[in-house]
Image (cartoon, rainbow over all chains, first blue to last red; front, side, top):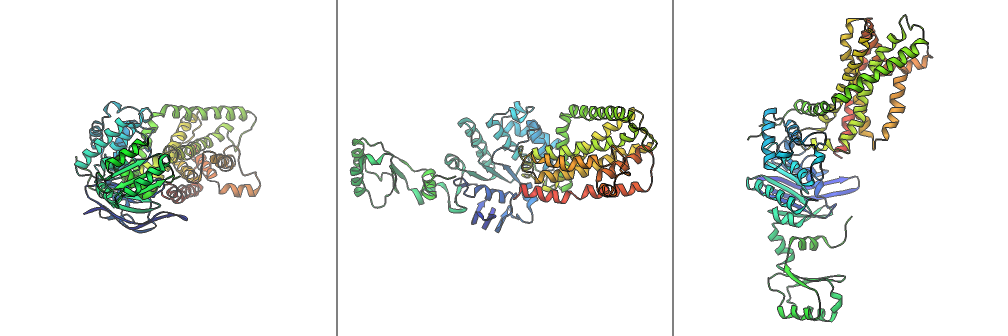
Length: 309
Length: 260
């Protein structure tokens, strides 16, 4: 069964088409990533799934329910970690959890028990009585995740959950998310952090200009768009002649691009760039690197290198 | 632990929202209580005794006794209005409290009704604080004054609702200046709280009939003096309409803000 089914889903704000007829499925139990530059339509799509925006067109079913007619029931089954911070600054850490539990209809005793359990799970027990403004960025995000889990949701929606966190806090949060995925919680993760996508997502949809450019597992996307290895020469202009030579000797299945001073070539096979060739370029004093491809390469190939708003 | 099996109803979530507000209010209860008691006391002393010395009896009563019921009304209306403007707007925009609520089964209707009820609660509390002060001055003449809290609630709910509606329209705190100077101050001044309206030009009296504060003040005098007659029913009917009417447009406006 699919946790989310979107067919020709679109959203217009006046004349702006934020989401243009996208179709995708999120399978139950998987972590599905929405990747894309700012303004690509990720958050808008997420908002439609969590029933805070009404689609302008198309069909959207979440947990088997239509978002038009059963928004409250859908929201009842979802846990949401929104972009930025919507923690309640008028309340303490523990009160944030218990008041939230109340919104889901949990009784006081159950709210307290569940709140205590989640404070422990997110390592926030010592902060229970503290006001929100006294928390660090990482503690806030942990509390936001704890709050999203208060109703034991069937599906989690995470909108840039680790933006702005230091590596320790980020990895701590990722570890908790992996634990949840291990327990079978479906997740939709919106991010433009490629490491995060690689670390957590089973499948990804790459968004740009309101459309989905491709959907697949990280491995599939790498194979389809970037191949196995990438050769980068950041200051290619310093040795144009040698570069021209290199181009004639590259295997036919290696694609290459030039962006100003930057030269990039992608090989579908490991070892696609012959060692003698690389050595010759190095002798000419060119800084270059050959490395495994990453999702970031896929991202840049599909969405381009131009700066976005 | 198993989650509750069924999505809570709207009444349940509205109560949860109101409970959140009361939890917050409890924390600043003392400052809010002191304000609610001291401010009317100052008004009472300044206007009642100060101005009262210059003014002969109004309709057979001392000016202090004429003024007291209106002070209960104005306290309720201002407390509700402040909560529905500055308080609601703070939760709507900078704190994103409502956005947080909408990630749960709580819908915009419950958010708005919760705001209006909270404003009404604060208004009722402020009105009752004045009731205590004026009772201490021996200005309550009838056991009918026991119904004062209910009247405060009705009046405060109306002004709470209108204020939430104004918050839904506002793009910044500055916009509230217009609402206070062009809306609240005139209805406060031309309501019969400080002076009787019956000697004013007829068009002023007609305009005052549309003013909810006029009806609240008339009804409040009837309760405080024990001068109950049928006209209080008209006033209460008017206030009931005023309490309900702003809510649907307020819900629409806030929904447009939160779910474009």
